[in-house]
Length: 396
Image (cartoon, rainbow, N blue to C red; front, side, top):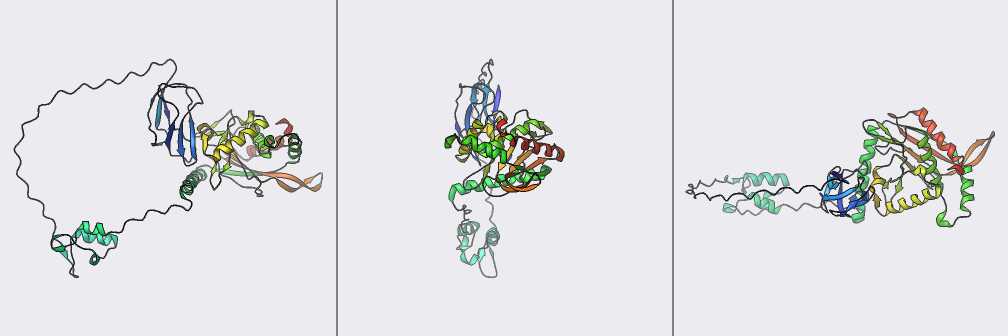
């Protein structure tokens, strides 16, 4: 029997709320099937199963908030016998009621401490005085209900002003959700900078060949099928990661390189927030398929409907500033990954060609890498590999 557990859907996730079961006991599942939906700060995530078999039992109920690693279901593997039902406990033998014992003599009731009379002439119990001082309440404003009109603790509690609820962020529930997301992102990035020894390298690349090739390709395509420079950058980065080890994988107790390139794509959410789902096996996709995958994952990210594999299998992330006009940005690695590539806005830059300064379309890439795994020499080779592929876009 295999226990299907709450997966980690990012370095900033501690728990998730189970909002939907898509299977029931007795259902057959296979690798990659979506079996549940979990709500996190980043939206509703479709949870995939990675072991085939038959759903034996569901261990979690809808609405439960469960920590990462908590059991969600038990899945019986192919060929395994169903779990034997737990034996029912034998009924206990009837117990003869004991003879009633003689009632014990009543103990004298404890005497409450006598109310204290302050110099102001106000009678109040010690507990009431202490509580009033704690709450900043003037005893002269409290009406006593104790003996002789003395003020008791209940009188102070009744007269205490009700605590005001914490104000919600302007914008209601959506703003509150984005605030929680921002807190989670901040916590994950603070941990990344604290624990990962970052080093940075920047390289400006001539995009003339890629721009010309892209224009020629898109001339015969309908608008919905046109390629964007982002797809070329994604493919070039994925192929470079495949060629240069040390930037593609996870770091746990040590570096675990990956033979597959699951390239994360940083997607800005409308209204704020950032999510970086992975496009699985990005290096194996042709540019049209990669462009379609980018459009699909971007739309589902903004709709809050991603899959667990897209959230926890990324091996490297590319973050693009798009058409913002900003030339470069130094990013922070997404744990447990060991590298992040940031692409500035493509723009006309003054470059030297054949001894002359000319205006050329260019882009600045910034590599953030984990010094426990790689160094500047390997980082320079990685950026050069990306450049070589951008100079030959027809081969992508």
